[in-house]
Length: 120
Image (cartoon, rainbow, N blue to C red):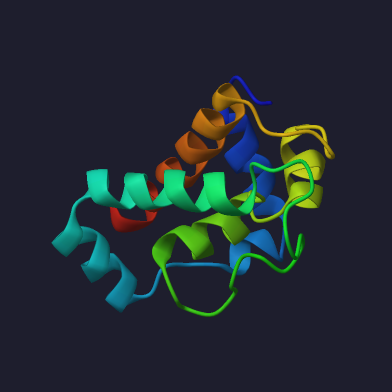
């Protein structure tokens, strides 16, 4: 895991795929209307439900890519969308349940992206 998220985000910006994701106007409005603390709660719920198990259901396909929720777009933009990407981008081992520290780290990455995208 990265101690310095700026270093991580520099790498993500160099990825053509990761840097292609952005929150649209509707999603930015959703964040503004609902507040950053509710979005963070959603992020914790999604990570705990979809990524925490050692063998998540539909791994690699559990995070929608369409403009559904700002957290999902943030997950694709930050490489926190599936266990394979968590390993590739964040060195979080596959095939073991995520710890609470892992979950907190993942949510912090997601929220950094959302805050920067929304300039909240």
